[in-house]
Length: 430
Image (cartoon, rainbow, N blue to C red; front, side):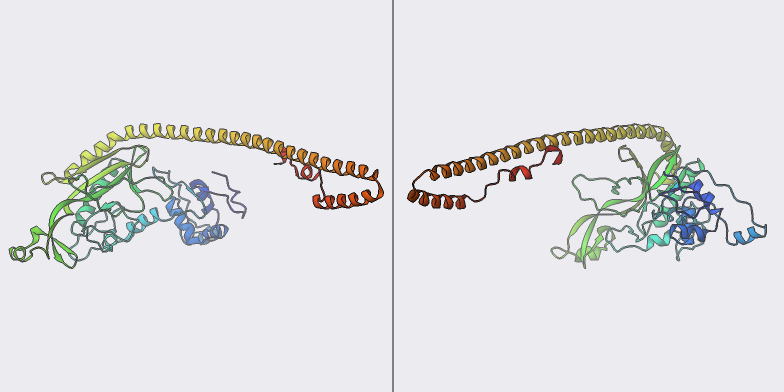
């Protein structure tokens, strides 16, 4: 990170600001002036402060400061695992933490028949239900919400409340143990794991892609980020095509419908539909570390009874994941340095080959210039010698041969032995 020009001046900071630098800046002068310095609005700078968890003066602070009644400056909180710690002008920030803060302030009620989320719910599930219900049309039975800045939960509409409640219980259990559960930042390199929703995977069977959020849901266990996806599993269900591109589970058809729906106009097939049973996938967000773990409830064991065991397993996995990530990061750095060295050697070899080629080309061009000069000298010598010999002949014969010599000269034209040499370039000029 490059240092920025002092905050006492009105010059623009270069490249990026740390949380400490931003904190110092917003308590020195009004947000409006800071926004003008960066070419953004004061409200945008306020969002940046929220994203970096930097406390800023409340409305009216500067007026109170002038009369000596301003409240004391709050301390900058220590950066927690997963926090954004730097901001660059133009960077895509001001969304993750701001969305969480907004949801924490919301007091929304579910539609009739839905469950009301309590204020004690984890921040990632507060106020998200109505966003999940604003979904794209699809025949999979699973919600595909338009909003992408959401907790990583995949569910059908029927079991959405149950899935959010299970996610909430897991997140709170992790938080109670001191593990932070958040959305990945916009500038992180976190990779989301692939999700196979099928309760019983089947070989050589097409797997329909599922909805995925823009950012992974993470839990930081001893500083190690672990991705979490809570999802409702699908099960293979025998369905009947009943027309209008609609398939209905055979188990939902009446006896009359089963007698009436006959081939070839109606046919049976198998589709993966929501099962109502929950599963959790935890995965390494570091692409080079191939680790994941899946827990799924059965008809005999409800997911809520697994939560405490899941927390313990994640805690036990964190040290090994940290060691693997450090090992892979070391290998990645070694490969990067090796690649840089290979590029350097390749550039040296390319330059050597270029110089050799330049020398070869210069030598060939020089030989062409010498050959052209020798040819020009040979032609001039021939004409000069012939002309001297013609001058010793009788007048009648001399006149005739001089005419022929003139015609021969005009046929050959001007021969410049220096033309090639004038155009020749030395190796260092190429």
